[in-house]
Image (tube, rainbow over the protein chains, first blue to last red):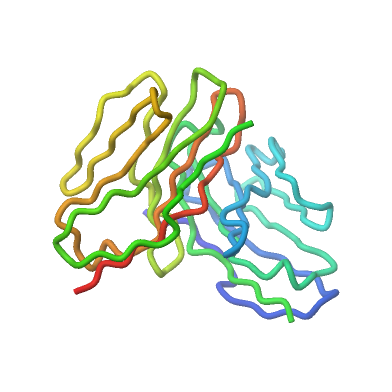
Length: 114
Length: 114
């Protein structure tokens, strides 16, 4: 059974640019959530999607957005990149939307903003 | 508000020693779930265990054991006879029943020295 796949794994952008990250969940999983991981702030929740609907959103500015497609694949977009957006972005999928079960994480997309 | 504190930012032990990772949580909810995840160098978080607030029974899985004490709001993780492969960052996390997101602690980086 294939795991959660995130692309690209590494990318370098400059300030002001925008970036789109992709996440393919485990087959059959309908919930996809995104986390930002930085050395200073740790793991911070960005948003969660279930059946193409955003169910929950963390405390991030509007520059961070996401969506989920009918096949449960999800993308997140960061516009007008800032140096502080440099981080590991992790995607996680789960069968249900209630988060009481196991979350399956991808290996992440490491974004460097110069 | 919910909070997870992992006071140990980094621990180093020699292989075969036992090591305990501390986790203290805060919540006023009576129904909640606690988790431990392992993050190896590859980046993806790997689920280790989930406990709900009504189940204080300690659990052992091979060399891993967890001690859940509601009286002290702690959910500590012990690795017995540590191995080099246990080197990773370990995260404790909390989810309350009425919320859809998981709150992670800042993590403890564990180094097992050969």
